[in-house]
Length: 381
Image (cartoon, rainbow, N blue to C red; front, side, top):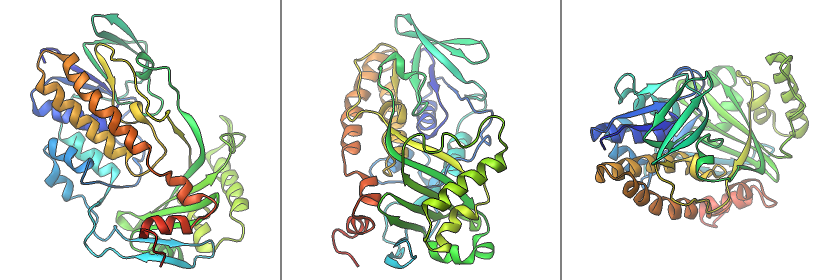
């Protein structure tokens, strides 16, 4: 490529793409809305799969560095009911193939693998428009703009680049996730730490439950899961409401939802050390695709947002790696590269999104037994 590549979004997919391009000597710039790499917590553990995430990191030349980030013993899984009774306990016996790593550390590994200046922080994209001949103009929130010869949208669910290609909009899937951290859990919250176990905990019932896992440094990362209307918490908090008041209001709503559940489980929100992060879950239409449009494409959630199913980050990284390799394989012919990438990406993403509904298995009418059956191949322990 004689002209630079412009990526919007410094998530895992965008950074893998930037890294593969850099390894191939292709100029690239990544524009990111956040002010810095430390602007917010980068989520919890990710299990990196051997069929998509790990090959992407191999393409980025970072597989050995990735292995140094793996937290041992985290491929342990426990399922309990609302009383805290253990229904399934699968220890990490060392034979697992999906190692767990902290998302933030993986992102930092990718950032550190790029030269200074490749990622431009504090550049929030307000919109983009075509200029003709496959070129586009990015407009930033501060009123500045840049021109892009080849534009890649890696900017997630609410992508500002997607409207160049598609009029699809994310739709609420009926579930909301509320995220908390408990720090120094072994000392400060021993009953909860014991309930979570060494790896991941699923405390499930129809329509509601908890997901939690052990992170490094003794932290427990928890997600309260609820089947609820999209505006379930819309009235909680406002611009004039303090963070403490909002946290208290969310906790009160959750306490009512989980009345009668074991205290070591409800402590995952009532004893949380961080303000709740409320995430209504959205998805793009199954099989979302677009007509080939010169000079622009999408990767990751911008292209194929789905409800969390363990594949999102892995798919985003594979998208980035495959697109980077396609661009390198077609020097001077961006359209050939984008066509090759999209023809492989569309069916890959559709196949993954079309798999079993994870949330119906976890929180459907037969929970937690439906989830146990999935984990055990139908042989409930």
